Amino acid sequence: MKMLIDRTKKSVLNKTISFSAKLIDYPSAFAGAVIMGVIVGIINMKHGAWPATTAALKQAAYTFLFGGAIIRLLYFIVLTVPGRISSLLLSVLIASVVTITLVYLVHSLKGTPMPVESTLPTVFLAPPGFLFLAVRKKNRSR
Image 1 (cartoon, rainbow, N blue to C red):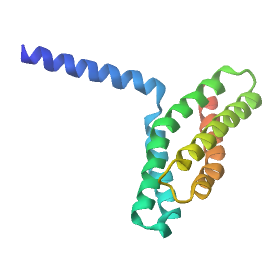
Image 2 (image 1 turned 45 degrees about the vertical axis):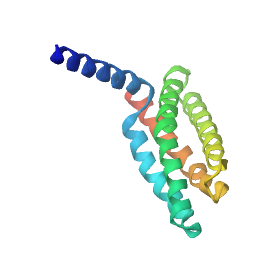
Image 3 (image 1 turned 180 degrees about the vertical axis):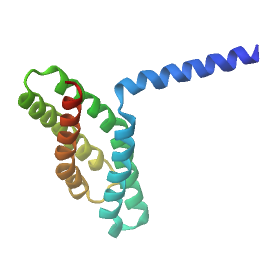
Image 4 (image 1 turned 90 degrees about the vertical axis):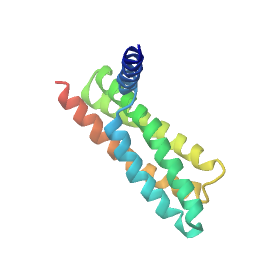
């Protein structure tokens, strides 16, 4: 009986992970979380270790959860909008605007000493990063 329960738990866990992988691009989400978390932590370091860590963890958590989902949105747009240039531009524009807006909102919540400065790396890094991912996805879909 215990073995059946263990299998059921594993089955539910596997199904959950498999389903969530359709919504979140985990490798990109993890890489983005580490990179952006470190950058935001460094930006806020002059306010002390605790505020910098808070800002870094907020950025990393946001990037992992929402960034991975926004990348899936980017892939959906780039593969469904007709035309190479229009699909690339639209996917990057939508993903960038959503990301920059949400990152600013997350950092505007209590705990990040420098919300504007903490959002700037996203402003500069997200659009070219999204463009790279969109071009790669578009090229692989041919």
